[in-house]
Image 1 (cartoon, protein in one colour):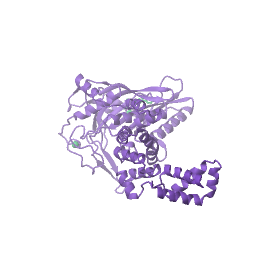
Image 2: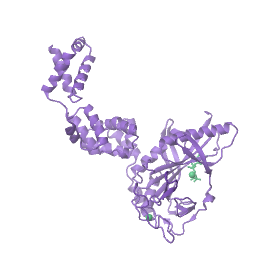
Image 3: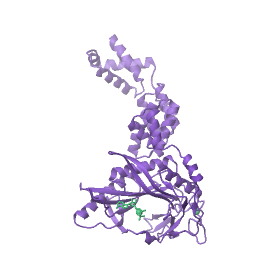
Image 4: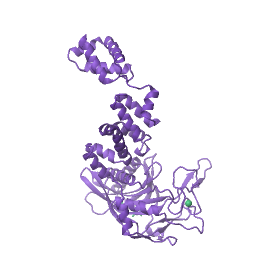
Length: 478
Ligand code: ADP
Ligand code: ZN
Ligand code: MG
């Protein structure tokens, strides 16, 4: 197994977040009643004509520029012919030999340093509809809401070696697409999905092995599992003296195995030809320049800024800048609270932990930067303790509203009243005489214990600094 190297190339499909579809003016929004976002064009009625949505070209060019591609001045749409029940035209309008963008790269950080993953091409195409298999009726129902939703397909060279690099590359790509705001990249909704091509070869060999392809994968975890399984399967075949067949596989999440779907088709099987209903796509230098000049700040630059301006650690800057949503949250909440250090801590510790535990993507964070900023201010002002703040954060995830409102409603305001604090301190001291003896004998841990007891009795609401101070005062007195 260790003598082998795994080679991977990805075809990543990203749904573009244009308001309307690629060749008609139907809305692209997700989750509508089946077949309500349709018209004669995207339902493929005879005699209808497609008109290319200019925004789709703009978004694809943006993606190309952000991934260091050359932008083609002279591009076109082609028909890719194949039959599928959710593809009523029986062809998909895509791009064949003249894609909009070519020869780019995305940089990832590996253990051996930075590595460029080359991008072969980025082309635009239309999405197909969706089949809903009806468990009760036994049939399949077609929903064409997704038919004609614009996609870009980003095809990498087979430059990836192993699952770690794949994970890094996909995350980087997702992060770039989010930053330039061309796709929401919601993997659970299928906005970002990848065809994963895998082959293996003995280390040191220069020729590639035969690849198999797993289509439409939309979670990081299944991609990792599928590559590991498939690479091992191929190695077993080769070790047994067999040959790998070039084929399309289906990954089954439940059994954790790949199954053969069909022989791999070649380009000629699709009988590509230029779509006669659409004009050529000609782009001027000024057009491309204008998009280039308006590209927003990308993750690398944000990271640099966080190191220099905010003095974050390399690790924290990496985590925060990896997602546009986290980065925006960080900058805005820092501005509001004037305490970037605290906001940084909240994001990389408690917020990240909750995201992990709930498998939530940063884009789905339900509260906003104003609410996080306010939370930090309430701690800084001493209105709430940090342990109460943690409970407020949980509330913000569950039912976001102003933290001030939450603590009022829950009665979580910190007790900073001297009389009330003294009362608890005296009670805890009378219950724990041994701790007083220990403290006087130099055991500082005793103080921590006493403060902990007082916190428990006040359900975390007592001001910890005041408790500390008063415990020391009272013990010195006795
Ligand atoms: P197709 O549409 O036939 O799958 P593409 O050229 O669009 O062809 O995509 C091929 C993908 O497969 C690319 O991402 C490429 O990097 C990858 N690939 C090609 N050869 C290999 C190989 N031997 N091992 C792994 N991946 C490969
Ligand atoms: Zn339509
Ligand atoms: Mg493919």
